Length: 487
Image (tube, rainbow, N blue to C red):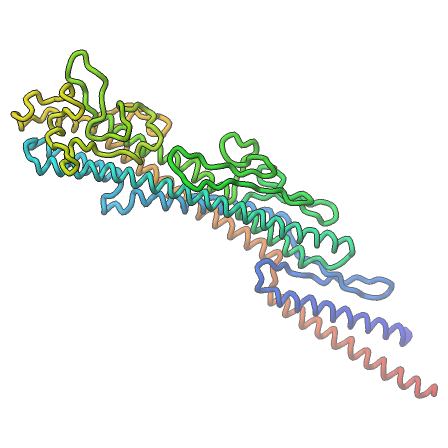
């Protein structure tokens, strides 16, 4: 081998070692960045000269699995957070503030009063229990609507974040495509692009579709284009005031509805999917249960006409604004929020306690105690109300509690349903979080920087660099000797 060939070989080896050491240093610097993927210095030889091509560690299958589990976990977390807030309507069981606990207290107060119908203190205690019962339903309705309003606002925030991330993704994707066309190192831009995809998957289920030229298109998990050469616009109209009868707006992608009843391609996962399920499904179902409890209270404590022919039943102890009769199942939407105790039996509002015992809130025809005012020991009406609280009556079968239930069992079933739904969501969050941990760990093992490996590689490269440098030094000395002899 001639000295010139040996010199060129040693110099090429030295340059290759330098380039590979630069890649290792780059990996070491990026080791703490969770979005950084390990870079690999691939040695290639062209025309007798060695050069380094920077490659990027990746695994598309593991990345897709990580994105899928990220979206699924986000769905369940959004739902669980809302359910925990709804559980405030049940509260601490020891404080007896839930509708079921208030219903039990109302039943106890009524039984005590029925045993001593001439005791005004027990009558007043019953009014207090009835007022607390109505207030618990009013407060629960307020909580439900507050949760729906907050979820609606979070959907708006999520949509804004998606649009912002898509704009950043467009920039990163264009950088990857243009750099790839020029043969430049685009590994860092690809890291940024994958990081943006991961962030998007928190808000919405994502499907990755690789294209020619290192382009990557994005679709929702239901197949709606989210990014294809350019970002699609995600829109949502925020609702500022929520009531039981208010329906929140749907999310649209490029004009296509992806949430709400009848959406042709509904989202399956992501934060938006969880928030929509909370706002439009779980909270609405719970509100329906509260409304049905309120309706059965009005029905059970209604007054019946005692004359012949009898007129229609009228709201008695429990009523609501604009009441003209006793509503049937399903309950009027939002009834639980406006239920109140009839002022006719509340002395603080000018009412009379004896109307609870005797009837007559709706006039003389609805009086049960025909000797009202003379027979203070009359208990027929109160005993009938005690029975009415435990009798099976038709309810809205759409609530999932069957076609019939008593007042006491309906209130208890509603609380049990909410707690069971919360516990189920908690278990799903734990499961999805575990899956996400495994998927992230697998992807990390495949693409992240291992400092032990990088340190060992650096030592190996330093030895190679040192050997090449020594060889250059020897060749230089030989050339000097040769030149001195020739000279």
